[in-house]
Amino acid sequence: MAPGALFEEPNIAENFNDHRDGLALEATSDAIDDVNVLKAAMKVKQGTATQKEKDIYAQSEFDSDKDKTQFRQYEEACDRVKNFYREQHEKQTVAYNLKARNHFHHKTRAEMTIWEAMEKLNTLIDESDPDTSLSQIDHLLQSAEAIRRDGKPRWFQLVGLIHDLGKLLFFYDAQGQWDVVGDTFPVGCAFDQRIIYPDTFKGNPDHADPVYSTEHGIYVPGCGMDNVMLSWGHDEYLYHIMKDQSTIPDEGLAMIRYHSFYPWHKENAYRWMMNEKDHKMLEAVRAFNPYDLYSKSDDIPKVSELKDYYLGIIDEYIGKDKKIKW
Ligand SMILES: O[C@H]1[C@H](O)[C@@H](O)[C@H](O)[C@@H](O)[C@H]1O
Ligand SMILES: [Fe+2]
Image (cartoon, rainbow, N blue to C red; front, side, top):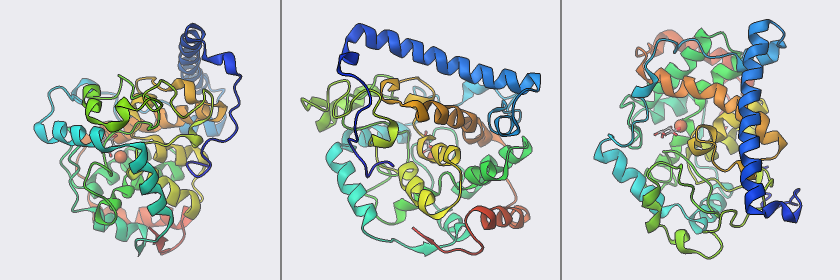
């Protein structure tokens, strides 16, 4: 699993690299994913979907009358957001990524229950986010409540509740917010133009590296995203913790690991690195995204009224009063 097993056997033949074929293949695979998402939605509509498919992939309803164009407006964003991304894009290098991963694996930062972690995180205001200045506990409960309102399974609600808890890193090993929050992208291969503020990568030393600056860099097409180093931050950190310390299904773990990977799940970049499993996971990540993004304009939840309900779900997939090793 990511990222311990880097550079596992590539499963794609050499001549795959031909540029024109690559582009054609990428366009075809984009189209296949779009068709799969539509097919999943159709099956739900026609009543032929299995319960599992219905539960995960049915179109979100809570956001049907929201103006989606109001979110993620980075060109008009304030300086706080722009400065954040400049710093992040200049500092997220392969060398830093390896160091951070090593560090992560070699110690336990704290032992806390999920609820204690949520309370601790509550003082952090995310500098990268143009859409909310609410505290993290509010954002987590807004996401979870939207998922619950749409009747999604309990593990899906749990993912909503915890998906940003990795931001706890800020209080431990982080060098700032640049290695905790914000959209993610792979390191070790060229930075794609579909990442927000792509020009700011010019200040990143890897931008001029003879290997890391090539399209595939240190990877091979089809290598699978488990073998790719995504920029270090809250998604990657929480994914590793939950993979080992919960019974959240693979789809839920993918929602956690990739929820900030907008260049991939929204803009269709980096398709060449996907394997079969990743195509399935992409659908799950896309099903999760509206609950993360569009719930930011919902009413502020009343924490005390919701606590018992969510403690019940935490018990189910993580354990009663379980102290997580963070
Ligand atoms: O600013 C936000 C925030 O940091 C989120 O937690 C992250 O998931 C998003 O990708 C990002 O756009
Ligand atoms: Fe996040």
